[in-house]
Length: 317
Image 1 (cartoon, rainbow, N blue to C red):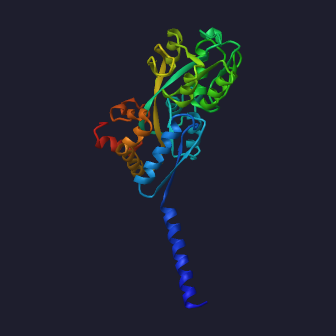
Image 2: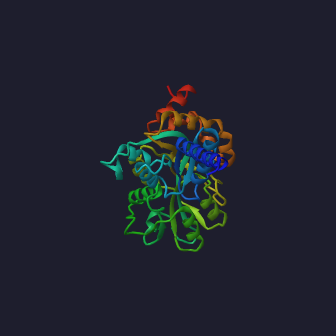
Image 3: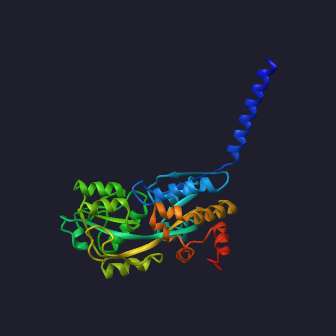
């Protein structure tokens, strides 16, 4: 081997070693969201870009999932570091309901996002006006392992409807639910999500559906067991053709992280989100709900890294 070739070979080895060290130094973060047709995925994609640009040696990627229940599973298996979660995360952390005896104590809160409402939707020609009319109907109760499915089952049970016997349950994502309404393959749907989610906008714009109120007696039964939820009104004209307020209930979405994530890293991630909030709001106006005041709505323990940032800003004492 000539001296020139030897130098080239050594240079190539040095470059490869440098790249290996850089790769080893990078922190890879997997963000669990939900389906691409919901709110979590596009917001998660914007957050990943903010972190990749603003946090040194961080490589964040976004993963589509079935929603909150699936995200909890992924986080528990250490297949996700950051996850979008709804109110189902509260009983999961506490070991209540379907998580009785299995508290998911690895969940830590990072930032408040926006309220997520239960939305009861029926096809215009379904003949459904009350819960009694659900019997024998085809009802979308959310994707498998989603927070929507958990909430739908709880709501229907509180209304005296057995979700496995009294209806024909369809486990569909919001995108598939919208398509099923368009194809007249379902009569109703229980959906848990933020207001203005694309799938619901689509079917209301096409004039395919109406909204039902959750009656007071059913609401009281449900909220008795859901300490993280409260009565919520979807204002009239939130959706096309929705001319009246719709009564239901809602909880706050949260961005969560695993408890073993490095505190300094979580501090930097939290700081970056607030410093680039304008980018988030520009892409998703509902992210205006990510405020220091709304940290009070978080009912999970804060991650120490996030807590440090909030203390500096006076958001927590």
